[in-house]
Amino acid sequence: MFFIDKNDPIYSALGNRLVSRFVESCWQPYAGSYINLYFDDFRRGGGMFKLTGCQQHNLCCYCMRLVKETNRTLEHVVPKSVNDDDVLRRYQYSGLVSPYIFILKNKNVHFHTPPFPHIIAYQNLVLSCDGDIFGNGIVHCCNKFRGNKDIIPIMFDSSVGQMVNYAKDGTMIYSEALNSTVLNLGLEYQTLVLIRKMWYTLSVQFSVDEISMARADRSKFVELLEIMEGMPSELKQTFSNQTYWNLLFEYYWFYEYYRGDN
Ligand SMILES: [Zn+2]
View 1 (tube, rainbow, N blue to C red):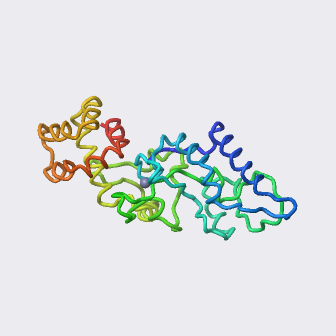
View 2: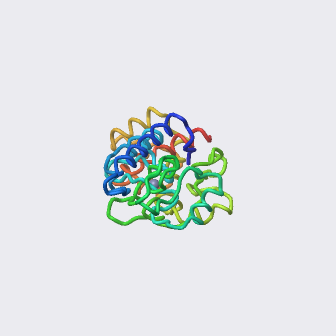
View 3: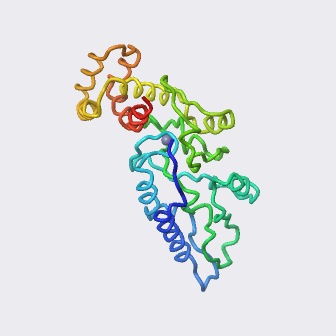
C-alpha cells in the first residue's frame, strides 16, 4: 500500500473547492433547503474521480490494482451510511481521518464549509476498485467487499510502508492490530496472493524492458515463462492464460515493489 496525503495542499485545495462549490450549488434559498445534495449527484460530476485518480496514479488505495472507468469507485473511508456522530468520532480519534468532516443531518440549515459533509468530503474519499477481480459480478476485495465494515485507514498513515509489507509468497505482513482491516478488505484473497507471488518471481529475474515486452505481447510473456529458471508450474500454467495475463499487468505496482525490496 502507499501513503495518501489528504493534507497535501495542492490536492486538498482543489478537493475542498470542488466540494464547496457543489454544496453551494445545492442550496436553494427560496426553498430554504439543500436540494439534491447527494453523493450520486456529486460523483456524476466526475471531478473527484479525476482528482483522486491523479493523486493516486489511478491505483486502488487497497489492492494496488490499476483501475479503469469500468471498475473504479469512490470509497468512503467513514462509510456513507454512517449517521452516528460517535462512529465518525471514533474514526477521527485515530488521527488518520480529518477533523474537518461532519455528518449532515439537517438540510434546512445553510452552512459554510469547512467542515465538509462526510458523504462527499475530499478527506473521506479515495479511489478504489470495485473488488470484482474477474469482471463477473462477484466481489472479492476492496470497496464493495468491505461495504460498511470497520477498517483502520492505514493508507492515511505516512508510515504505511512499514506497517504493511508483502512476502515472497505473496501473502501480507502486518501487525495483529490490522487483522480485521485486512480481512474486511479481502486483501488476502487467493488470486491477489497468487498475483503478488508471480510478481515477486518475475521481479527476481526480469528487467523492466523484458517486462514491458511481455506486457505488450502475450506470446513474449509465455516465452519468458518458458526460459525462466525455477518457475513453479502452478504459476506458469495459471498466468499463461489470457485472462490472468491481462489481470497480472493491472497489478504492475507489485513488480516495482518487489524490485525495490530485493
Ligand atoms: Zn482494489
